[in-house]
Length: 189
Image 1 (cartoon, one colour):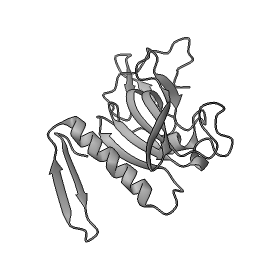
Image 2: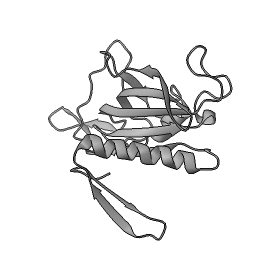
Image 3: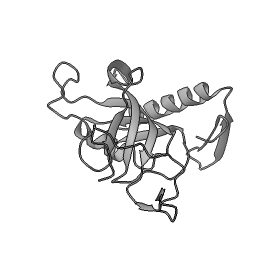
């Protein structure tokens, strides 16, 4: 994925190709289909597959960074998207998480590393990296492969210090605004 609706890739002979799409939506839809094709062509899905849809700006997130995320999750069924089992896209509240804290499934921890503020990514997560053999009662059947589209809306970097003017500045140079800690316990502890 490149800015201005471009995607670049190379084929099995290592020849580079670029495609320009008519819209950002067309580029994202193509990228999603590429990710699904990668999943369907792998004999065994034993790690998280991901495909960037929008790159975002600033520093890539690392373990310990706090994020606010909009997402939609689908069951992967019949070699493609099945039913939506969870989403916060049309809700007022974003999901707040701290990467590396173990509060979300392992596939998210792995698949979101390196994302940037404003970035969108497509994740295909095998059962062992999701809810495994137990599933989630009434929502995710046991041994389900999951698909998520995630967008990082806010980032609070773990490494922060105070600047000479008393303002909080990030030692990792991110232009991302830091969300204010509130009663939800969202902090850079």
